[in-house]
Length: 191
Image 1 (cartoon, one colour):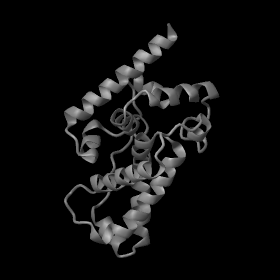
Image 2 (image 1 turned 135 degrees about the horizontal axis):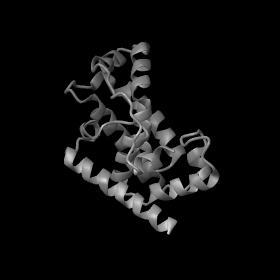
Image 3 (image 1 turned 120 degrees about the vertical axis):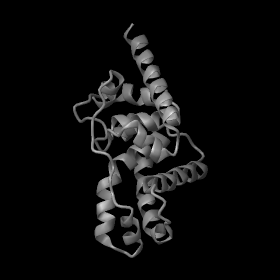
Image 4 (image 1 turned 60 degrees about the vertical axis):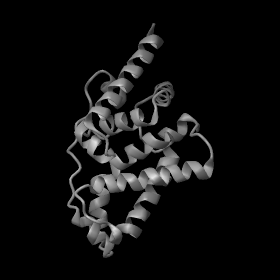
């Protein structure tokens, strides 16, 4: 299980997100290949980021789709500044906030909703999914987002800091605080 392995200190490793900033300009000119290339390079970390914000699988999927629509609609307005992922994460964060304001509810759907599309391992039994959902709910939004980006997507803390536009020290402290919370909860449950 990905998150349990992170709690024990061995996160999944992935290649960093790399795409040429010119992709966004090409998307602004209705280049379908550029959009597909962008989608393939950012989909997993973007979904992990959004899931960290909303803590609900189906809402995260909806916001992910809205984010891609917004990227397509606003790509022609993008001003290259060397931080295209920060721009994309800002779009996603704003859409998540707007979604919260519109729905005026906290994500409290059943555990089946989180696992409906296999976000967690298909080998994970029902009890493990319940534990995983409960663990993630114990974290605050920043901790959950940083841990999911690191654990699920395998990105380095400095990359996460750059994408979230936060100091690396903040990302590291929130990651470590979240992992400590999760360890403590698991140790208490085991006792």
